[in-house]
Amino acid sequence: MPAIKILVIPGSLRTGSLNARLAAVAVAELARLDVDVTKISLGDFPLPIYDGDLESASGVPKPAISLKRMISAHHGVLIVTPEYNASLPPLLKNAIDWVSRVQDTGETPGKVYRETPFAIAAASNGKLGGTRCLQALRLVLSSCRAMVVPNQLALSFADEAYDDMERLKHAGDLAALQAMLRQLVDVAQQMK
Ligand SMILES: Cc1cc2nc3c(=O)[nH]c(=O)nc-3n(C[C@H](O)[C@H](O)[C@H](O)COP(=O)(O)O)c2cc1C
Figure 1 (cartoon, rainbow, N blue to C red):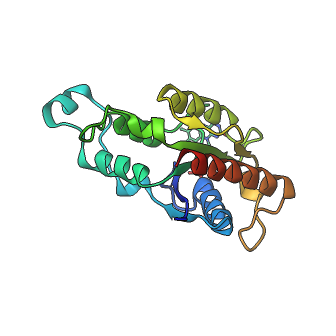
Figure 2 (cartoon, protein in one colour):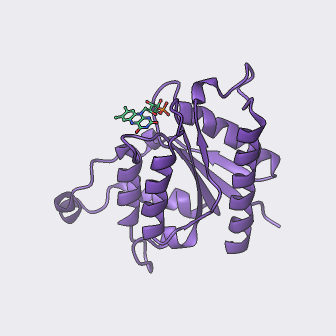
């Protein structure tokens, strides 16, 4: 049976990003579940801020089409994102918005969301660990009619969460990550 393919998308481009670090741990854990994992950077899909006039004049930008097709080529997606002012960062929201406008031949816009399960995680140095961002992101993805698995991970005090091997040092954090990833892989298998 072909392996399940999971795409991991960090919501930050920042050097030393807490969320990129968490995404790297998730990649290692997914590999242990015998999953084919691809991690991308949204920096490789540069997009203007969504503007309906721009879309009318020039269509959906090629990087949005490429990102949509990248998602389509996988059975599930993990997003690991910072919280900005209790919500999701514009880099991520803009990418989600543009992808929702892509219409490949024979498809209605947004089909990729309806066919792909998502898991969501956040890392922050704060006590809440990005919980409010996850609420907002769950709402956004659900409104695109994506299936978002119930388990999620909000990693609080994230700069103190790792040992010197870049592993999660608290058993509870690791267990929450693993439970969420198992849910994503199970749902991806069912929706395949
Ligand atoms: C504009 C802005 C708003 C922020 N708002 C929040 C917030 O609401 N909650 C929070 O926990 N951290 C907030 N932060 C702090 C981020 O969690 C922190 O910068 C984090 O390191 C960003 O993620 P990254 O390390 O993956 O780039 C904010 C940071 C910025 C730049």
